Length: 293
Image (cartoon, rainbow, N blue to C red; front, side, top):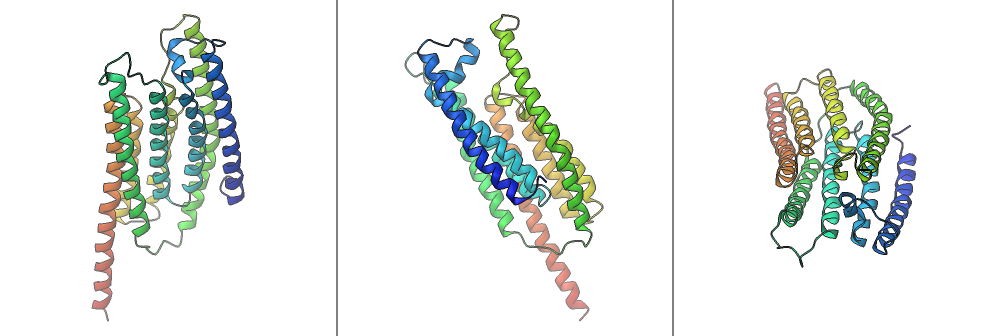
């Protein structure tokens, strides 16, 4: 149900309309706030402080669509799903950049304050991530196709079952995360709490935790369908890169960007070494076959 092309196209169209509508609604709220008709707590005010902040909303809906694409591609290719995972964190970074730009003030504060430096870290981090994602995609395109196990269909069915179970879990997590954040904002306005969670981390903490579990299940299941050392190590490396990305949501500033870049760089390096190892393995088998001629 979740893996047919017709549903994918419909989801893409719906996402475009919802993203455009969300942008206009967010923009209207920004103008209402600027006109003094809406007032919120200073911690939440950053989300509606400038028209540029309204760009935050369409990117949020695009991110939801990217999460769907990750689930869509996971049964077909583990490595392509990892590439989608990298694209998701790059979009999260872009969304954060737009929010930080909307709050940038160069008139009353020095240029090199912590908030401005975080914006600089995010911009540089995004450029590095974009280049690393390009390298990862390039390695995927250049990889040599290998004969697959005849029982690989069973592996695909297993991954579809995992992803089908993942969809309702992610829906529940997304609704729970949003509702709990709204409750926190309400408690903040009432003075019951002094701070709320960063909206950038809402849902994605839980999402990447669920991804780690899914990746480990796929890694364990892959042992039944292959005994290739290089493939097992590659899949293990992909699990590690997901763990590093998940850890990045626990820290802020430069540490967050460094963990994101390190996670993606680790995945690129693993895929590159895997391609080299696979090429040597293929050459050894070719020589071996000639030996028997």
